[in-house]
Image (cartoon, rainbow, N blue to C red; front, side, top):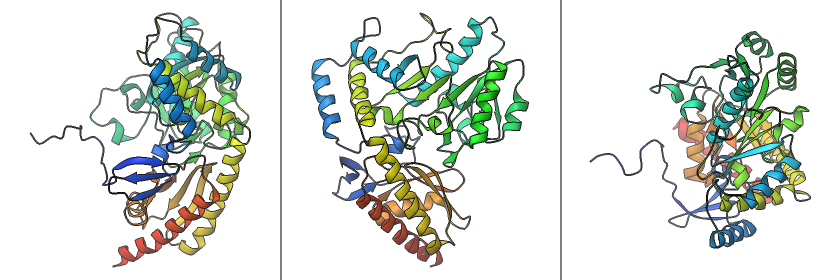
Length: 398
């Protein structure tokens, strides 16, 4: 048999982490890596955070799983804290970001069904978006690498250019339920929505009776310097998908909604075997307490500004290789010039300089460090990127 026991759907590299310490990963040979990928924006408290580790151990010894047939004291407490600190009135807990987006899509369609307008089912999404890899979420993207071979996809989606309010407006018809977008596209190239675009979509939703659905799976949970990225636009969604940082490394997601948007989500309309289990809820409460603690968001803003400034100062020394810096907070990207491939550069930094980052669309080096980084980590990362740029160019020229 030639197939591997682990289904070969990931292009795994030779890094094989066996332990994590703060902002570092340690491989099975003892090698250390500065982790500026954070499991793709997941490990916001770094690795081995003492309070998070204790929470998991204590709750695992107490109660891990029952069923949503029973009351969930920890889930009720966590949901209330999310409601108290966001636009939302109600929360459905999931195990991943894709599940959270699926719940958001169902909530939007069910809203119009409850209003007696079941024909309003079309979701308008945007080019270069990433919303997950379930059949429903890949139906909301235009990227062939995610769609090819899985047709027929789900009907009821239309993809238009990102940051193009005119195109979004033109796509609205009598069947439209709402818009689905990331305030900052992660996989698509670390591209923030413009102020006019996101505010324009909110206004359009208000005028046409549509729902604004935000996917803050990657850009949410303090990653951009505010609890959620949409806060920096002065708009609020009707429905929002959250995951990644919400569990600090533990599988957890959530779909948040206003009371009005969730009016169709009644008994029997949705469910999850593991969603909202006591262990996940205990983790979520601990992570939320850390994120909402005095000074945490200010620290993210400060470190984000310093990292961005350091990256921008790096560009003149390598202006043949780097074009610009984009993103918000500690969700940053460095656009590389066409002569250099971001994916190859990520591999070079990893294999030769001990720095972990990830690539993104539009030939972007994506930088997603733990939100607890200090200035010393920034200095170390910049040194590695600069040295990596020099050696990468030398290797390319050889």
